[in-house]
Amino acid sequence: MNRQDFYDGKLFDAYRYMGAHKDGDKIRFVTYAPRASRISIIGEFNDWNEEFMEQDAQSGFFLFYSDKAKEGQMYKYCIYGPDGNRQEHCDPYGFEMELRPGACSIIRDITTYQFHDDSWMQMRSVGMEDAVNVYEMHMGSWRMNEKDENGWYQYDEIAEMLVPYLKKNNYTHVELMPLSEHPFDGSWGYQNTGFFAPTKRYGTPDKLMKFVDMMHQAGIGVIMDFVPVHFAVDGYGLKLYDGTPLYEYDNKDTGESEWGSCNFIHSRREVQCFLQSAANYWLEEYHFDGIRMDAVSRLIYWQGDENRGVNDTAIDFLKALNLGLKQRHPTAMLIAEDSTSYPGVTEPVWKGGLGFDYKWDLGWMHDTLEYFQTGPEYRSRDYHKLTFSMVYFWNERYMLEYCHDEVVHGKATILQKMYGDYEDKFPQARAMYMYMMIHPGKKLNFMGNEFGQLREWSEAKEQDWIILKYPIHDAFHKYMIKLNDIYKKEKAFHYDYHKENFEWLDCHQEERCIYAIGRKTADHMIVGIFNFSDKEQEDYKLILEGHYTRRTLLHTEWEQYGGTMKKRKENIHLKKKGKNSELTITLPRYSGVLLKLTYK
Image (cartoon, rainbow, N blue to C red; front, side, top):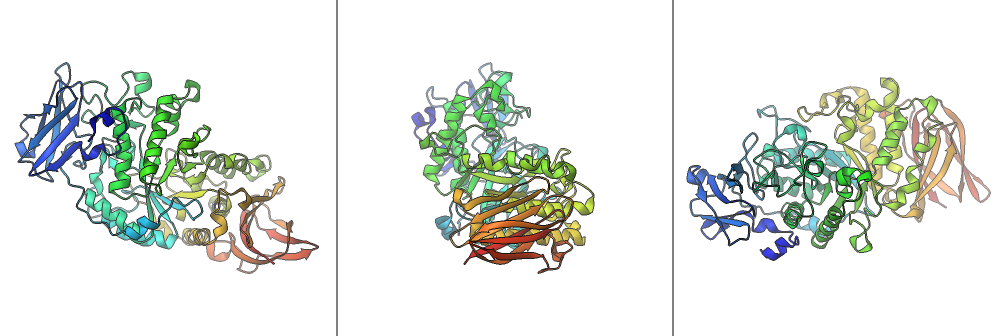
């Protein structure tokens, strides 16, 4: 490792030198703690008796070579701060950790697994003009293992169940909530102690590599949540690592996050190398197809508060991070979870942007859910909550999402959010998801949403699969499978960031709560027509330029999906009217229809 590059914040592979590595017939341990007065190492190989590391001159790097240490053995660093106080720490660059409440790092060679995904890696892309339909999941609570005391399956066991499920449900990618090691289950992985260690809850590094490999061989991309903003406060982690604030700020106002964790100080070059190397590590060593960066707003603005101003050093870090990742992994997706209106989030760094490929459209999500939570008597008033998103859509490359944050903490599940009683929630949810699919933007849906989960998500319980025994939930699930299939197959849905691909065919039916959207290609157009009112809308007429042949792709009210209408009884008529076509349709309450109109 070029140490000057480390001091300058330029490294993306510091993990190849730092931590525990085989070096000849010995294991070399390296850690960086510039203000430590001394450091010892304890582990299984020395019966937990302190052996002192040597600092290389005044570099801040402490090294130790052991001819007794072996792969799979546990170890810790005992770091004596400048005041002489001793604190045991796990290895910041450790490749594996023991299961909580244990806090030891584990010596692990991550170079032994042989991937079989060459064809996938060669053909993958960021998907700008392809179907991108992401299934977000929490690894431990998707399904739970009755034979395990904690209820967990191993990474490869989950893959065996997940691959056929994702294929059947027509998802193109799976996004995993953070898998970096974390001490508290209830943090869901968003407060880490082991940024290079896949959590032991579900197995070893090799088993996670096998998980990704199995997904790739099935044609499914894998995205992982990455947390570059903050870390857990546990004393054995990064906090006060060398006896002083090394990774964090030294004052509470900027050093403590709203979640009670420690904020990274992104102006420090050592921290930049640490986070850059961690992000690159998951893409390089585990073949992840992208990372979704959590809480980007907290990097853009101090503490995420626009009134506090832009955090220029964090912005510079983000640009360098994304630029470096794109240079190394041009086909990997970089996704920002960002609630701000800061410009250029998905512009390339060389154009002055932050360099992400996609940005979550949190505004679209909130406006849409608020609309469907509102009683139908108010939807005329709120009509343009559903049109506002297209006013700003072309500013960024947005991804539409119904994520885990929307089904916890008393917010209710997506299905529950729909206005009205139990029976009325399903037709509204079917229509809302159809609206989501025809709206430009790549898609993401959290586990359980696809079959109408009614219980808020908890990391301690598996999804309520038993609910599929109820016909109305089973029908809803089949509807979502069909909708995903149409999205995946129809190219008109994929050209999200071409202005000519989208048209509001009608967005001025405020009193009737009718919307009509067109998604265009060179030879056809897919039209979505919606009635979000609680009344049937008879003989709605839509004038279209040109002449077409018509095919109904999907109606939310078909009986097979829980509706009240027999297939091919949709009451839709298309006729020539001069150089135009007139489409006449009767729309049941809370309904939508997708039509494929081919140009004559």
